[in-house]
Figure 1: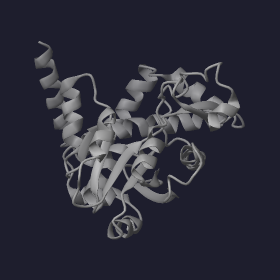
Figure 2 (figure 1 turned 120 degrees about the vertical axis):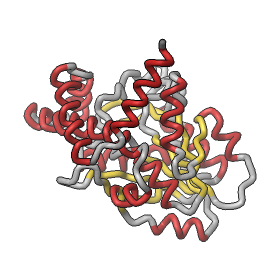
Figure 3 (figure 1 turned 30 degrees about the vertical axis):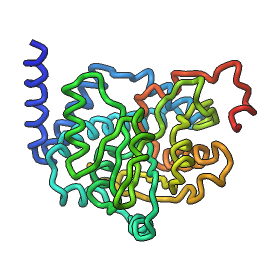
Figure 4 (figure 1 turned 180 degrees about the vertical axis):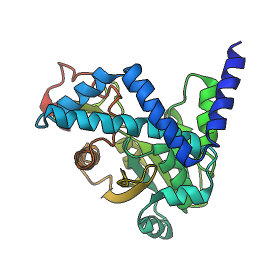
Length: 299
């Protein structure tokens, strides 16, 4: 029975992917109403995250951001379904920006770790990376517990040749010999284990950060880039990428400096376009361990 339900569900999802973009966004409008107005999905989480992150904003301003985020959230759902079957031309059209720095690094045979936050449409960003970068594209991900769902997303993310590697296997993967430079693509703004996290201030709150990014960069001497994906105003489903360099010498910077720089860029980008982030995520569900003094976080 469970197998039948899964097959039926994914049949429906694949049919939705065939909708026109106009009808897809009509579906998004309906989903926004049903998920947030009727279902009240994580409204308290969103409200608390926004209030703590923007203490200087009025209730009216926070309400406006929340409503804009809700539509962004449901747009992400239908966009992801559309990108399951979208053409390469569609991907290039809907995400644009200057990526010439990637060509330069490829010509210099430079391996890269390419960071992003949960801004824009990260599934589109993954497809764009594997389609438009000359580097071998290695996408780091966390497998889903549901096998059918995990397979659906693996099929999506590998459409244009990306190699999908679970986070637990990335160190072993990068030890393999390669014929050309590679780029490791990952999002690094989830909530980690509080006992092993790097702790800092982010959006006015104590925030834990995964240390793995810096460990990978140092061990394999990878140039660290950060990519922001902003929404194009008044054009649903269109995004702009801006790439900046965090460091080309990861072994020479202070411990945790890569993580700090990443968060400062992300924080500034969120403030510039506040509805464009995953506010429904319980990002601050963990608290800084009492045994960890503030000065210890920079070591």
